[in-house]
Length: 171
Image (cartoon, rainbow, N blue to C red; front, side):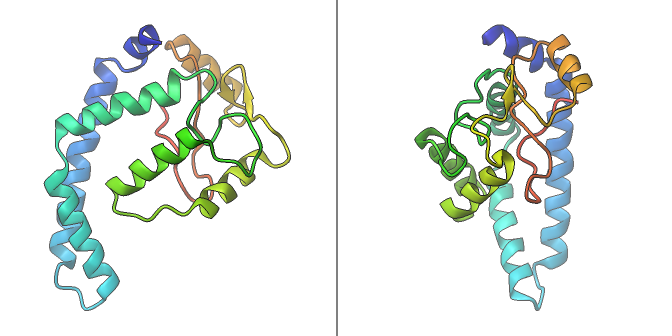
């Protein structure tokens, strides 16, 4: 698994994450500045949350988080503790619940089991497994081949499930 992470989470990937971090900070700062005095309470509250996030967000934390994310998505053959883990569609493993609660807490959002169960049901349909050789069945074969060539053991992601991006793809 560590071999996989070394290949996948390489210098280029780290540089990309650093660039995304800087762009994200600039975007959040601009949003906060533009909306700090908004007359719409929802927008104003969101601006306050973003301002708090900016204070907590550091490049070091983002790089550590990036490494964790890449390990979870690309070096996790059974997709343990992800929405793609095999099992009943209406079941969230305790490990997944723990991960989701932590992720949502970081964004100051509430955890609602029913929402995540519904997303999982949409992913699985009537199946109990959505993986083929460690990769989500919805990932194209060309992409799987590219990921394997880059050293990935898994592909525990799909973009835009229920309007959410469940993982940042490597490509």
